Amino acid sequence: MYHIGDQPDTNDLSISSRNSESLGRESWQTQLELAIAWNRADIAETEIFTEESQWKSSDLEEAMLSALIGDKPEFVRLLLENGVSLRHFLKENTLCELYNQLPNCFLLRKLAKRLQSDRWGRGQVSSRQGTTISMTHVSDEVRHLDLFLWAVLQNNKEMAEIAWEQCRDCMSAALAASKILKKMAQEGSDADEAEEMKKLANLYETRVFSECYSCDEERAQKLLVRASPSWGRTTCLRLALEADDKSFVAQSGVQAVLTQIWCGELGVDNPVWRVLICMLFFPLIYTGFVAFRWVQLHPLVGLYGSPQVKFYWNIVAYFAFLFLFAVVLMIDFQATPSAGELLLYIWLISLVCEEVRQVRHCWMYINDLWNILDVLSILIFIVGLACRLKTELFYAGKVILCVDFVVFCLRLMAIFTISRTLGPKIIIVRRMMMDMFFFMFLLSIWVVAYGVAKQGILIHNENRLDWIVRGAVYEPYLIIFGNVPTNVDNAGFDLDSCSMNGTDPLKPKCPVLNENHKPAFPEWLTIIMLCVYLLFANILLLNLLIAIFNFTFQEVQDNTDRIWKFQRYELIKEYHSRPAAPPPFIILSHLYLFLKHVVLRRPPAKYKEFSKCSMLLFCLA
Image (cartoon, rainbow, N blue to C red; front, side):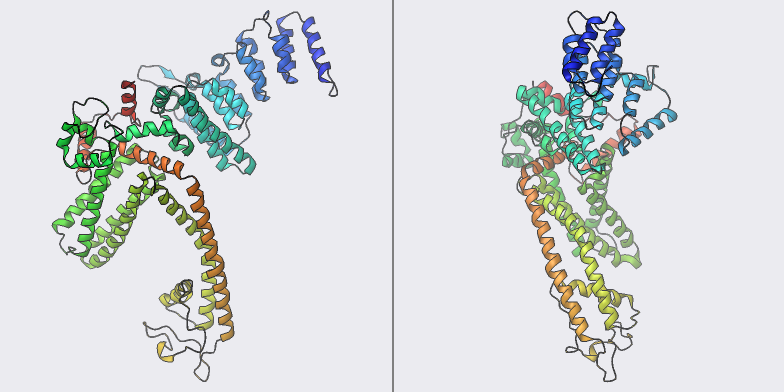
């Protein structure tokens, strides 16, 4: 029996005396439980796990469970070193007991709901070979990962590191842990705990690959594009994208692999101007004008199948599309569609087909701003086309298509993401737009407050909606840009410039007049309101916006290299899986895919990101 006031030496002597008096296996286990209770891994290592003692994995399972639940990482490591087999220890009931010890959170509730629906909805699923896959069987294959995820969900650094060392695919596990921790940091309400999660996530996302790359560059690069069976046949690069691991993607080893993927079968040292010339005069590839990474049997396929060449051709095609669109809107927009307009419609159909193909291959499609812009531009075009084909809505359709042209031009900014200089500037513009969006909420409070008060003081019972909006919103908004109104004082009042009863649709309604036909509103009040409004809107809020923009610019500028490299990865990923032909000729590739998978009913191969490049890296080893 022990007392709280006992000194560590007393405890050591007590445990040692128990050790000398013990005679059987049960007493050894009792001593081990006692050492775990006192968290004395040093005594357990010297007095219990001796050379004479022989432990079975089954004898240590209860102690292992106590050490895990009690958050004693030193004992967990000691038990693993002395014979505990996670394969036999981590049974389904053991994992359930461990996860029951976790605090309730949104992620766990969502996971439990999904597992419950799987149990009751599917039960047991039969594979093609006739074997039945149960929850226990699936757990046997990923039990090391289950323990690792259990430790990650607790944000327990030491325990997670021990469990991570037992995983087979360490790099994928580290990236997955980074993604989970970042998501938990967003969901959590404790700022300090969220910051700790982010630090642990950053540790996982950079440390593993840097150590692998320092030991063996070639094998580390292969690991990036290797499909991981434990994580749904995904790759490390894809996990890094989903986890938004900019630090991981920015590492030199990752960028070296991405450069090889970007160039395809072309050599990475080819100047851009040589590649551009070969795009136009392809016979030059047979003269050695550009270098390939290995001897080519079909150099033409190697050239035009390169993501780099696909990108350049798509830039040319997009400029041609915008030129054709502009010509149709300004010169050739007839009641009956002309040949140029029909070509424009065919071109748009090819763009729609490509967007459908991207949705099929990428569930993260809608999370990309450029994809949202693509969908928006296509939807606006369809609405404009539907109006244009109706005689009574012909001009309205043209107006909608003109607005859509602006959206298509904004999409042009995506091509600059490959530039190391201009790419980060696109991110700055995007973030400033988000800053401005939230700033408009603050500004709208002052605009509406001043506008409604001014309109109510000057005009009595205005019933024309367009003039109400003009006076309450539009004019106060223009004041911010220096358009000071003249109707807030009596000096600039002109009876001929307004309508007495608001009957003239082209003139504003006159203010309330006195018996001398002069404005009756309190001039001193409207002038004071204008001065206060200018003070807050023009000076305070606009300077606040400038300060926000400066902060955003400096934040992005300090991380320019990481941001550009992450943007570059997203662009390479898109063009690696894209058909070689640019729009509108890309529709031929889409027709081939349609005939292959729908008409001929050939099952599509499972999508593997950079799978071809993975094979090439292994072949070049």
